[in-house]
Every structure is written in structure tokens, then in C-alpha cells.
Length: 162
Ligand SMILES: [Zn+2]
Image 1 (tube, rainbow, N blue to C red):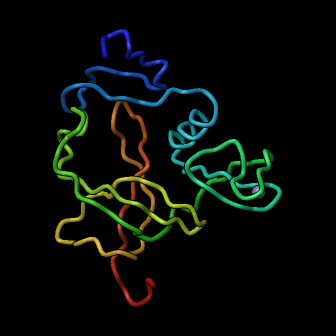
Image 2 (cartoon, rainbow, N blue to C red):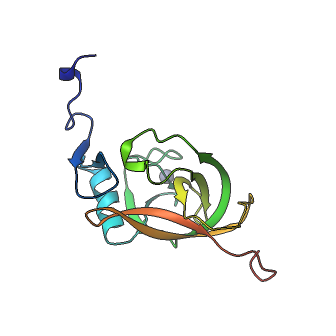
């Protein structure tokens, strides 16, 4: 691979340098269409999901077509931002300079109450070992010049919190 093989626009990412986020650069999405709508929602602190207007199927990640009935009649709606921890792993190696200051961090798969599972990160909680099935709620982390990244935080385990 030579340097001409990598074109940030073709890879649907904007590479921003500096700006005081650790050291290195941030790779932020700037693809038009579905991805732009999704990330615009995130900047407004909304986690947008898609739903089929024909059969009510709900999904993530993004798609122009319903996977259940193949309808293109699709609408956006904001998630409640609640769900349960489906799986996780702790990342100890920074695969990009932007996350150098984050390691170790917890990459998680949250099963949203609306049904879809979403890959995200867990906000750190000192002394709390993640347990599969623990309830979680959406928050937003400002990572680069105010860019909002959807993240999740586990709720304390209580008897009234199934
Ligand atoms: Zn459908």
C-alpha cells in the first residue's frame, strides 16, 4: 500500500489533527447520507435508530432497507438510551493515538431496549466489575472539539433495577 491508496474522503472519514486530544489525530465520520444523519443526531445527544414503517422492525447498524421485509420505507427515531450489557472486552492496546489516553477501556455490546445491539464503550466505574445483563444507560462523551460520542454507563445493581 502506498500513500495514494489512502484517501480520507473515500474512506468516509475526516482526519483531524491536533486540538488537544491526547496526541495524534482523531478520525471522525463525514460520509453523507445515513452516517451523516446518525452522527448529526449524536451531536444533538440523540442515539438515532431506524425502524421499518411497514413491519416495525428496528435495527442497528444503519441500512437503507429493512432486513425483515426488504421495505425501503424507513424512519429514524431516538432510542430511549437504555439497555443491558450483552458482552464486553477490555482493550489494553491503543490501536490509534486518539485512544492512547483511554487504555485500558471497555468496549461493550449493549442490547438496547428497542432490540438492536450497539457497539460502544463503557464509561469507567472504579471498583465495578462489568456483569453481563447489567442495565446500562446512554451518555455522550466529548472527544474532539466537542464531537459527541455515544457511550454507556452501567447502572448500579439494585433489587428494583432488573
Ligand atoms: Zn420491514
